[in-house]
Length: 244
Image: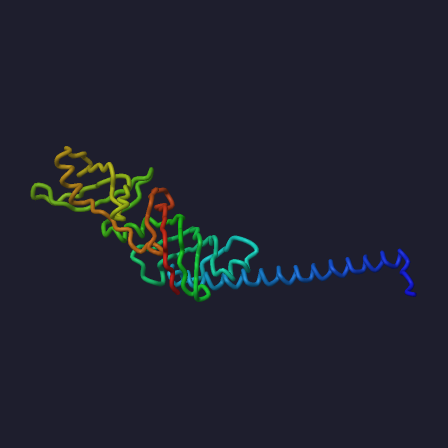
């Protein structure tokens, strides 16, 4: 006849089992967390390396991948959201329009080759273009005059005479053409404001659309806002391919 364990012994055995279970669960959770964190850092480095080539930056961009647990995103080869910040965009790949700073959010990134190539379902963000870089693309002596307006000074022919014309105006975006030009312009010659008919002729001769080429990932410029520190540009795009 078997001897039944006293109630105290049964309780102690149950307590030991519970402690072992908790310890094992804690170890497994720790291993999962460590593996998740390692994969998170590894993929951030891989994505940053791929983005660096497209952005043309001298250093790796800052990349922050959102969402935990992370291993589920790795298994699915799909990142829900990636925040990218970079400076000196276009410096190493000869972009037509160098960009001083970008701050982008990339959503729903998919890959088939461990992030060496990716497709971004949606991209939105902002960029900062130095006034000097914009003037270089414009090909005319364009300077920022303050209060959101720019100034162009150029020699023009007026009734057989060469005169220095000064045109000032805000900056307007042509979304379809992806160009900007001076809006609501005024013109002065030798300090005098010209009649409208003459002014219109000189403005057309001086003011040319400025192409916004070389924007990262060929995103579309959706807005422009001229400030003292540069031209702030809104960016958007869909189904954006990225290659290392």
